[in-house]
Amino acid sequence: MRKIFIAAFILCAITAQAQTNKVIKPDYQTAIGAKIYPLALSIKSMTGKQSAIEVLGYFKDGFRATALFEHYGNLNIEGNFKWYIGAGAHLGFLENVKTVQFGIDGVLGLDYKLLHAPLNISLDWQPSLGIGDDNKFIGDWGGIGIRYCF
Image 1 (cartoon, helix red, strand yellow):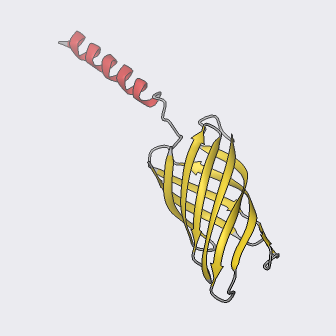
Image 2 (image 1 turned 120 degrees about the vertical axis):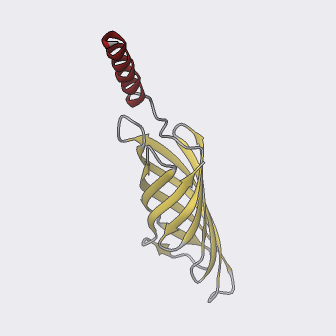
């Protein structure tokens, strides 16, 4: 009986150790959520191990849609904490301006995927430059993004 107990204990210990060493995939394919400042709906889809496309719908003084192509690099061994840089364009319709707003955007940020939950958190800076009638630089956009990962 004692040998059976010791064998069962060793088997449980080996199984528990194997479970703690299990590789948890930190990547996600698609994440949907919100980005705060200004308030935006965010959809991010990974197009490869080091790239993604993010589409943002802003609701500040009208509507502005932004599409960004982002390049990623790892900041830790697990691969769930990353930096990213990217560029894209925006198209907007502001309430106080009767014309369509168009411009180019950049993005620089940090991306963190929780290992044991389907959540992604990001912090970034998103400067933009308007082209045409609204050719001004906006350097105070960006913020915290919280998304649910699929």
